[in-house]
Length: 279
Image (cartoon, rainbow, N blue to C red):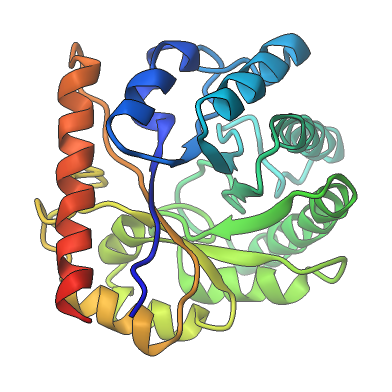
């Protein structure tokens, strides 16, 4: 089999400006990146900063595969309040336009807010319908700007934190083609990793590759936790996955860029070694 490309999310450097880490990322052998939207890392509201980031990425020969849309309590496309919901959509539209300006191919989006628990059924139905309407609006903007919208599975304790909710939302988007991003750590914590690849197989276009030990969202290097990576890769192959794996790793307080990239390279080498063993 042809090995899947393995890229790196710049989210592991969210405490640093993107301009301070791009050269080191390229020198470590990564050619594909996902750009983090944390404001200190990249102010996606600042048109000049976004343009400069895109120019720097291109000059280094990096491929900006994806841009992770912002997520926070205030960015709630499910909100019962229409003004709050509209504000959340506007924020995601800004992120979409920033992705397009940088030449990014995919916008990765959490379909729900950072809100714990499932509300009463009537409220849940209203919220998931609100999310579907909002996602159609964002998808329309993505189509117009040439950016592909990708919806990510969320942590199990959050609203829409299970795969059935995500499938409903994917089925509700009618404006253009929208695909899915599998976060392996989220699925492992949800105890759904054994079925999620099969269920998403017709939609799956990218993977956020990270590990944990089944108790919290550690974003460990693949191989450092309890995810069964040989099984995951075999399952991806059996369902003819043709996308890209993006390492989405944790950031450690005070860790140097060099140390962080050593961990990322170790994760890349681990997954590449498993893929070579599948040939």
